[in-house]
Image (cartoon, rainbow, N blue to C red; front, side):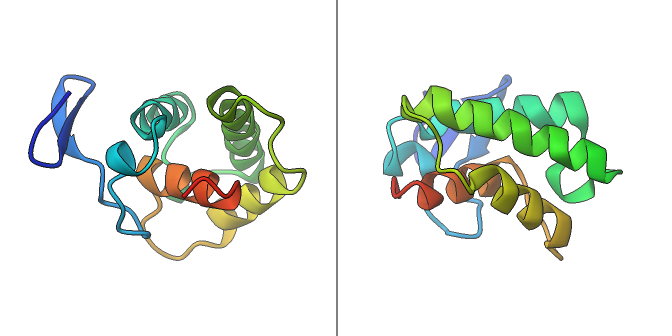
Length: 112
């Protein structure tokens, strides 16, 4: 557990407000920190969200984040989440990292 807006992730300090929404995910949602850890696991296994190599890889990412949404929220994710997440990582023109993925997930489900 970090201080001053920093959180320990994978052994290093990382700010959890470096996302397009500009919110500190650790403060904004009780599962924010866990979400970032899960999203970073997806990136570790499949590659970076904003640099995924193939549509198939992006589909796998969207599927994994949908499964994580269910685990984090304790309910079935919105029906359109997986498709919208796939679209987001397929069309996004800039940086889109684990924190952005979590901000998108939480905001889409009315949790942010």
